Amino acid sequence: MTHDFQIQRNPFGQLVLITANGEAHAGVEASRAFPITSPQENISILSHDGHELAWISKLDELPAETRQWVEEALESREFMPEIRRVCSVSGYATPCTWQIETDRGTTSLILNSEEDIRRLTARALLIVDSRSIQFLIRDRNSLDVTSRRILERFL
Image (cartoon, rainbow, N blue to C red; front, side, top):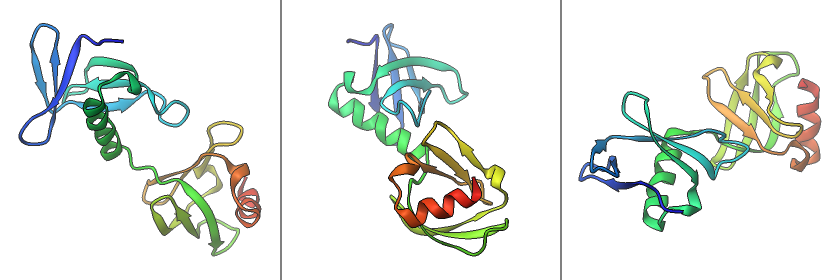
């Protein structure tokens, strides 16, 4: 599929969207409509003031260099470590501290209440810690037995 726009980088590293009529919009941002369930589809390109300028149905339809720039922009905008393992918790009453392993390394989070664990799908969970950092568990059934047992105590 061809798009009626181009995306480039300017000398400052910002994304620039160039429309079909040649209008350039510097400093645009990329935003996923469904970041967890469809991360490679439905991407909006937004102006610096949040207005949608373009729509990308599928990232793989973009030229390789453009796709890389859009993916880099998405990664810098969305910081959502994925929990791979729950190593330990300080207790089963909230607030409590969790020692976890994520796709970005080991860290800890403070869970203020059970309501900070949100079900996204039957298997996916979003955990928001006391610093408002969102941690994703893409498939809780794929966690190790210890992690699942700890998690079940809070669900």
